[in-house]
Image (cartoon, rainbow, N blue to C red; front, side, top):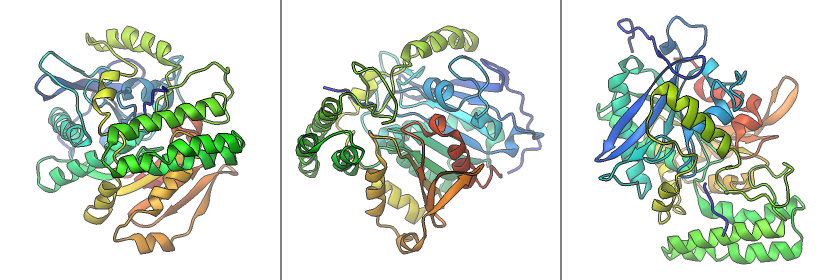
Length: 421
């Protein structure tokens, strides 16, 4: 079966350490539960400012679950260096402070010891993250009150709404000195059923399958909702695996992340995580990065123990959490999706958005979808009101930051009000 991975700052001076790469940095571990440790790696912005705190703090979270933000997100998508260790001219660090977090516990350089345990649900992930974030602000209090945004990808889109809800409540209760302004859910696994229900139509409309393929894929996909409705979440997960395996067979190995990419017919994929860069990343992370940051824990591109611990929770939607954020917080919620992404396809994402029920729904329903153009090219479309936005991204698959960095820059600027503090 195909495996699926889906204030005031006058008294502070910022002088980060020299880590790995061209930026000033900080990094460390946070003990979030007994025997359970989260690793984080901050790159201070290189923007032309007198103090980095004049720009927002953006947290990046990878998916999987169990994939590494400090590895894949950093070097393959948006960090200061690319996989060839050359400067990336589209890095987010040029605009904001970027904090990569290996989340949940066990991902990347994060780890558990003999007394620790992996998270088994979104609630535990959010609790762990809040403990980490409190520790981060204790170590780097200069970020107190600096606008905070969380952007993510794939299964990160499932984890982030709960994380944001926990942070916002703690912020309101005075438990933490954050200033959470918004979240960006990129090709996010927010509601599985709409994604699964759209697979067959998406493939058929693109000419990836014929009617026989459609019927085979749809026949399995239609079994997922009854399993979810009956609370048979592991069964639903296994059925999803069957659906993706059927897609792989009927399309003769289409790239789940970007349907226009060419690849060998024998290529195998990992669903919610592109794994073909694992060896290159392993050499970088367990070699030069570990040495430069003086780390002794072994980095993993995907930790399947993290993944397996979440099987029962995997298919559960978090749309109710998104609705709660829209109704009961001032956190701006942005959703963006690459048009060429199959594994978390745009039609399915649009469907769960259309099914949301929140106080601002009438305003959202009346808003218009308009194109956004960059340097004379139409890079996508956006529809938004004062609390919520959806960006359809052209010329991008699952990894929008690397597939269409121009569109990603537009989204970042739009969500963060051009990185203002």
